[in-house]
Amino acid sequence: MIIIQIKENESLDKALKRFKKKFERTGVLKELRSRTFFEKKSVKRRHEVLKAAYVQGIRDVEAE
Image (cartoon, rainbow, N blue to C red):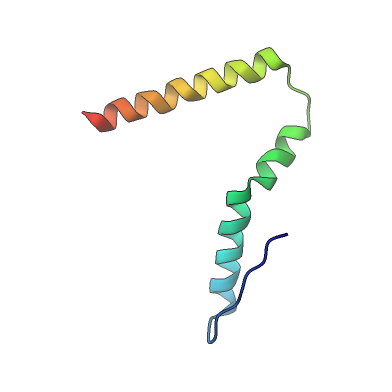
């Protein structure tokens, strides 16, 4: 359960924005979407490898 302490004189918009950020970091929606359909292990592994290659390519460009 996500708990957000609202600070004194803090607007509701700012508190809601903090809640949304914290909620997004937990990865609940990402997990929910991944569970909506079955993905074979081989396909899941392929996605992981492609993502890792993409991230590595970005890091290589930043290092230059």
